[in-house]
Length: 193
Image (tube, rainbow, N blue to C red; front, side, top):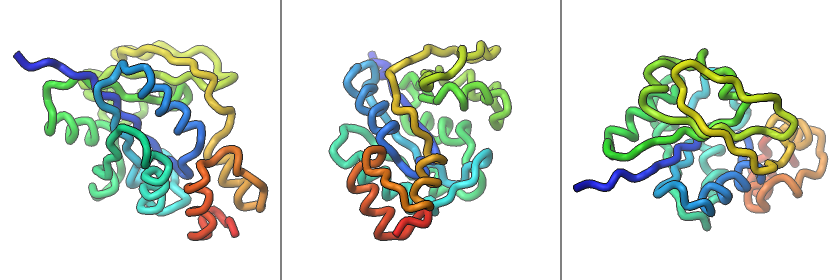
């Protein structure tokens, strides 16, 4: 008899990868609710525009997560065209079909889930773990989506705000892993010097 394992999939632009992402990942690992955690930097996010190239965003994720017991997948970066969660889930499910999959998602992104590519099919393949952002309103009930909510007191910072601060030369050391900040400065990402 094959034991079904629980696998969490955490996709995102990670532009840049910041301490809020790291806090959530460490919390998920500490719960031991999931047998596997896969972090998936978006290749060509179709609903967002990435500031840093996908290869740099992948490198930042690898630097930030180098000591964590998880998998970082470059499947969306390798795949041509826009990054759709449904394609990613199907690709990963094809590798290990017996697992039960949960897509980790912020409450703001979850509210827009019905606009995602092949949303109905996606909701049949995965459950959702909705991370409620600080100060966020109630999580909407989305027809067809099975979900749980999680409140962990995440850092009240966004990647957009961090990019703006970096572009203006402000100190963001408290919000970024040290290796990621060094990488950003070395590569002059987001206007950082």
